[in-house]
Every structure is written in structure tokens, then in C-alpha cells.
Amino acid sequence: MCGRYSIYESMDNYLRQLSLDLVVINGYDHEQINRYNVAPSTRVEVIRPAPEGLRVDRVKWGWAPFWAKGKRPDPINARAETVVTGKFFKSLWPNGRALAPANGWYEWIADPADPKRKQPYYIQAADEAPLFFAALAEAHPTLEPDERDGFVIITAAADQGLVDIHDRKPLVLSPEVAREWISPDTSMERAEEIVRTGCRAAGDFKWHAVRKDVGSVRNQGPELILPAD
Image (cartoon, rainbow, N blue to C red; front, side, top):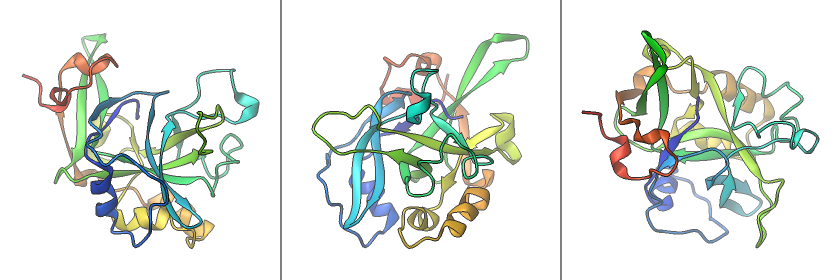
């Protein structure tokens, strides 16, 4: 996890779910985002703290420090167990905290009889409310994309029924904890605690098999998240 996800509502709705008494200091599109198959290396909306309030920026999914650029594809995820203490994400921790709003994510399960055949599943909140993935981001708002820019989604070990889908899951935060995550007043100790214990439990989610069309990044329609026949 996680290699694909969906974000299809308007940004206004995600911000409303957060109930933040903060001003978004840059412009953003108020229309439906309609991304049902967000893939690595594409640019997608993230929410970041700013000195005067919040920013909503479209940032590339995937990031690496300057000394690791070009050695391998930029990682898209960061493990909760090592993100705080590891060297790789040192320049993003803790001041690069951000949120990747979403509606759900995809995982693939291998067929025991034929590991080459995999069935995709779509995982979303049990009440189908928006999700907030804990992320780390680097962004330099300019007219032209900056090659340094990117973000990663923090992942945690899966629990309960979700283990049957995948052994990892995104660090999904409740709106209350998500507000803490991007607050400049949150201490480093509290941020570390959120990484360790802040992920919502498996009981907060539901999942179903979906069509294999999601395997192609060219496919983006709402039919991708519907239960497979």
C-alpha cells in the first residue's frame, strides 16, 4: 500500500470535513476533482499548513531527497515505523506534514492458484465519508513545477480484517487528528504519537472487489469504484 487511490469530490468538501477555522491563502479549483485512479508520479491535491493559514497545492505523488534522485523511482509511501528516525525523509520531518484527502484506495490480492492473477479491491470509509491520509510533502509554489516537489503517504501495519487485503494501509486520520497533524502548534512529540497510534481502525472501513480496469492508469471513470459483477 498504497499504489492507487481516488479523490473525486470538490476540495471545498474535504476542507469542510476538517472544520478548520483557517484561511486557504491560495486559489484552487472549486469543481469536482473526479480522479478515480490516482497513480504514482501524477500531480494531485494535498493540503499543507502555511504561515497565514492553509495551502491547497497540486503536488507530484512521489518524493526523494536530492542525494537519492535518479537512483530509483521516487518512493510514494513512507513506513510509520521508520519515517521519524530514518535518514531518507529527514528533510521532510516534521515540518513537511501534509494531508492527502481521498475517498478510498485500491489493493490487489493474488489468486492462490495463480499468483500472476490479481483481484483489485476498493477500500473506503464504512460511512463513505472522505478520508485524510497523513503525508509528508515538499512544495515550492511557482508558475513552473519544481523538480524537488513531491509527497509521500505514510503507511502503517494493517489490522484485523484489512490484513486479508494487504499487510499495510495508509495512515488514515480522523478529521480531529488530521487537524492536529497539520497544525503548526502540534509538538514533535505529539506528531510522533500520531504516526504510532493515530491510524483509524479496520472497523472504520469497508471494501469490495472491483473491475480489473483500475489496473490501467488510462481508466479514470466512476465505474472503477463500483463492485465487480
